[in-house]
Amino acid sequence: MWATKGCFFIRAPKGELKKWAPLLETIHTSVKIDINWLSGEMQGQKIRTTTYREVKKTVEDLDRDITAHRQQTNAEIQNDMYLTLTDQEEYINPYTNEVEIGTNQ
Image (tube, rainbow, N blue to C red; front, side):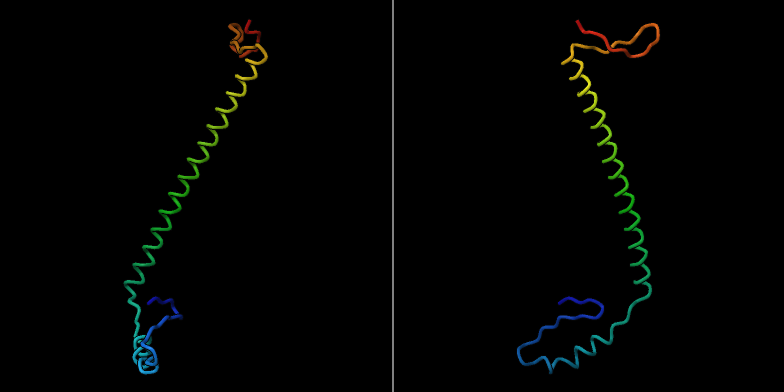
């Protein structure tokens, strides 16, 4: 039903396993690996691994960008809340072009 390199699961009618053993042994020992198939499979695994790494990096970059934007947004909200609660406002000084904090009254 399924197999790995050295482990097989075999089903046979009750009491007939010994009868089927020679045939199953022949099947087991007759397996020959096609070098072209193996080469293609290894190449396919290499391509899939590269694709997986690229997608994973893209997702990590997006997560990092989302986190940075969320942190910036939360910082701006916190600053606005602080200024509102303390009756202050940010102003741009027309002489220095720097942001200064003053009363909002």
